Length: 117
Length: 114
Image (cartoon, rainbow over all chains, first blue to last red; front, side, top):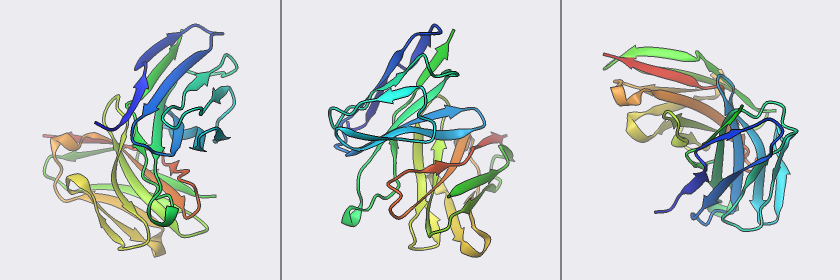
């Protein structure tokens, strides 16, 4: 079955540690995204990538880093510089619609919940 | 800049009653609008989308939404609530050339009571 796989589902981290969240898709989508979700704040875009070896900062990129070495993979590293990393992290992907226009339909993974102890 | 506002962070309805979740948008260019649903500890799933075709959009699970430019609204409705509709619902906006950079609302938690 095609889809997006995020791992781990739950992760605990001590302050000062970097952690990497995995996101893999087998949908052959060219664009991938990382969102952070906090209660009452909706989803906020951290980073996105439209193509392999290229990515752009979203609205809250500080304290995070990404790489896009392969089309199917878009890992997110939460660094020790992120002041409040406890959150639910969602990875998504999308393809282009007719005439290469992006349709706005995102396919989401099931999320990774990070807790800093 | 584009944005969406969801009125009411929590909505409670009885099973069988009308569901109405409100979303108002702000965009300087014609918007694309979306409703997504999220069940506990899961990702989001697309319910429906408006992309400048018909203003009344039908989605999955019996939901529909109407784009009203004069009111800058895109409210989500369902004639008869079911227990399985209990979830969090997010309105989102982007625009042509926006690169799928969706801007999400803060969400509305729908509770369905017997």
